[in-house]
Image 1 (cartoon, rainbow, N blue to C red):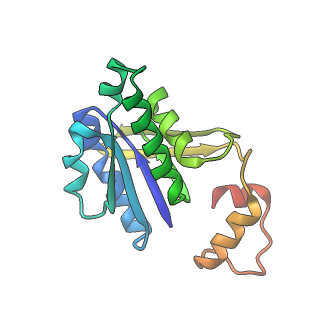
Image 2: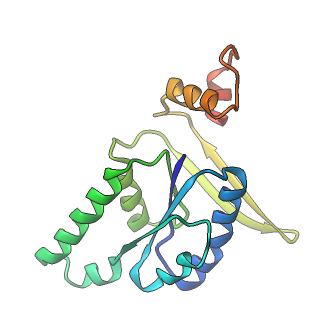
Length: 166
């Protein structure tokens, strides 16, 4: 499985996102986990042994000269890089417009449906909640992957809601 994590900035947010990699690596030990981060914070995800590749962006620098051809060239190179090796899942833990645009570049397909991700600190624990309205899901593809990964058996009959939870 190929996972793209998008948390571009700021310093504290990037540091606090490191446990997400640990959790993903624990649950999916064979996964490839790439991380998109602002170039000035790229050394932080590089410290985590679970990160396969760090992909840098320069949104802060790009905003200062958005009309410069070099900026559009860099954005085009980012798009080609993200589309060159498709991801099974992209997780935007930033939740801002800039990270949503990067996530959209990585998907290479029209956006459908809504996925909400929230993280809270409760009673000394971090609670991560994910909800998905199920629109835009290719249930047959999800089912095939679940069978390949041993999550379900080929003969299992699942409702759409059960597939959505995979």
